Image (cartoon, rainbow, N blue to C red; front, side, top):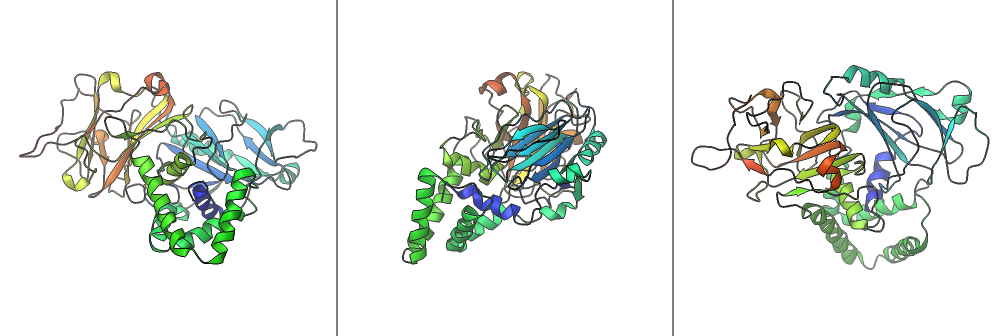
Length: 421
């Protein structure tokens, strides 16, 4: 199951999508649950690309906004393209083996698969902290996409902005519960995904493995063994992620999107960080446990994360910290609709020694700037540090984020608020 695990997610996520239609949520909120670890640093635009029968055309306008383009296959492997992120352009996305004549103004982007997913993330703030939300919104609404025939007729579709409730289903939660309660159903759905026409044809060992599974599964003779193996495989997928920690309990994978034959890492990232960028674009550090090796839990009172002056992540674009509900890896509902603390956060205060402290608590702690407060649930949670455009030690792979420390409360040791300046 480990080898094909990501296909259950992408197959379920794409069942109702119309190919070559750009769409994005009208806002970011805890209702966004279909993909784990969403961010509130960028505006999302995505499309299921379909180039089985003819090329698709993507028009990107010139803009001062900062954006990135991610293209992946159904397993999450990143497909590198020549789509520019510094200037606009008109692109013809073509499928495997396509031959034909394109209008001269289109730049061909050959794709190795017929139905990749494309995500365009547009930063809400500039690298120097300027609020560019309006610019980012204008940019994503100005994107156009459609089949080549639509382009030739002058009727490419603009980005469709839809209510965030469209993303309300938690596929992670569904998979977890199904594997726990009905693992054979999960296997049947995974089997349908692997056999789907949008899945690249299997070859070599992958084909032999799938055919052997189909043969044995069809006999109905090994249901108990298949059920236990499915649950054991997911347990390995989860532990492979959670156990990949540094000395401060932060999890960091540097092979995202380029796993080769490391199928276990690929499935682990699907479980916790699906559609994350590769290390050239972004670095991700995930934490579930504090400096005492205890599960982060808002019911304990809260935590402080202090970046010493020389420990603040180096980034061309931005760094940010987001909190998530552990069970679903989704945003936590709070009265402030506040989901992130970042280097660009307006009013973010530094301590007298130049360090930056972020307070992860269910309610704002006394004496702390609201800008430095990261709301967390009154229960288990995790935090993710993102570094977009990694530089310095982050890019080099030697960076270690600070430990998450429990906040002082009467009768307990820990870290309390520090002076700000």
